[in-house]
Length: 340
Length: 297
Image 1 (tube, rainbow over the protein chains, first blue to last red):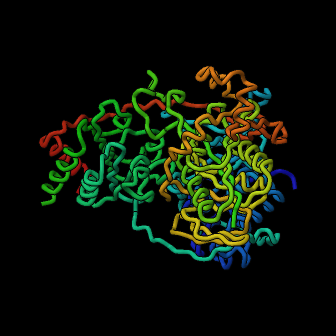
Image 2 (image 1 turned 120 degrees about the vertical axis):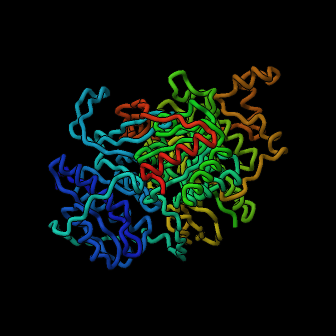
Image 3 (image 1 turned 60 degrees about the vertical axis):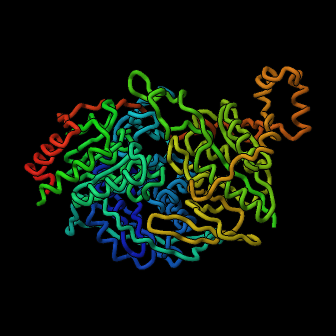
């Protein structure tokens, strides 16, 4: 089969439940496929998951490639990588998008390496565009422009993969918006037969323990987030209190997560969660681009920082130059006063 | 029983401690001005390998790819307990994306000979891709265990790890050899021992001989230094693309499918914003406004 211009999305599922990020990617994938005048395919692997195919079509897929097998019941790198790699080799999609979950970040690099193609992690935007390569004086038409914040502060890099196929990218949950489901959409479900090698079973899952995350950051109406300026547990507790009086959730920049004050489930930003609350309070957060990528869609932003030059102030609706240890209790008091 | 471990490590700019001193006038970060450190996740990976050696015996070899100055993290690994170190350094490695990097690392691991476990940090703080570990495993044709937070047990040709996945934890048993990527901070990392610090103080790559002689002229010329370090087991070999038998087209910029098309400075457009004084009155009027606009309450 010759190369296609088709766009594929890995439709991750766990215990028969589709991962949110896969559904979000179908919205973006639909947009890219329409731009390319091609088809959007979802790759669904598992056991007893056929019933999920209709949801993928409703979210925009033209075709669902369904691989069901006993060995695919639970995710393991090698069997999943085998199926996806074989399918790509056989059908030659133009673009493959994968959610940057712990599963997607395990699977995608393994597959990209086997296919000897490029993979860009944690993209914050994906577009179609032309690329003039100075290296080989060629213009490449309709490439996937893979956009992500780059190391170096206020930098956004656009990465392209002119020759490798497919063009692969991963995207964190919440970055793309899920499209409205359309139950009337028509699509095809095609069963594909996996073929394994004995070496694919070198790893066995002995036990799984599910931790139910109580953090509902993504859809929170109010987020109170702390960063490197939060000096310890006592100050972080002030933020918790403010979140509580605002009926919101606590968020954090990476600095605070790395400092061990809060679990990664609370991290807002490129490598964490993307939020779009009604109100975002950034306390002691300088506002590196990696953090802003996860919160600049907030409706109103209050920034509290001792440094008047902190970049966060440039996207804030309300600037409070001051010590969060003093400002946050005043906010709590004022809001409590209103509630009476 | 003794196991042969290889640990992949990286020297990275310390992006976690960005002070005003490293900011340029344009407000960007001067990467060269950042201190170079041992990638934090890799330090935990090294600890897991050393801990395995303490329990079962065996060897721990560290490999890094980078410029000549990256030998600093190899010495750091020797101070902490690694048995030997290799530096991959060659202009032909430069500009590599994760695919070309993993190819070079896999070729180097193969050159070392038989091994049981390859350890790597989950990700490096300068790129955060978490791709090099899985891609190196694929190039080696061995299974991978990503996001390991504990090595629970090992016996014969099987090892058991606990993984930290999005929705909880997973315990997996894997055949050897395998590659494991380790989540940073899950183990208490041993400090460099004073004894080993003295023992490996002069451990050097041939690329550093000149600087070594400048500091300690008594060492003599490069040939003498080389013979002396080799005899003491302090010579850190440098492997080139040729040494690892790599195909040139798969290395560095040439072997990297991804290219940076453009880099844009993000100009923050000052949104219309209000300065709120950090006083009781200021805060109270802010809250009034938020309530009026149905943002709060």
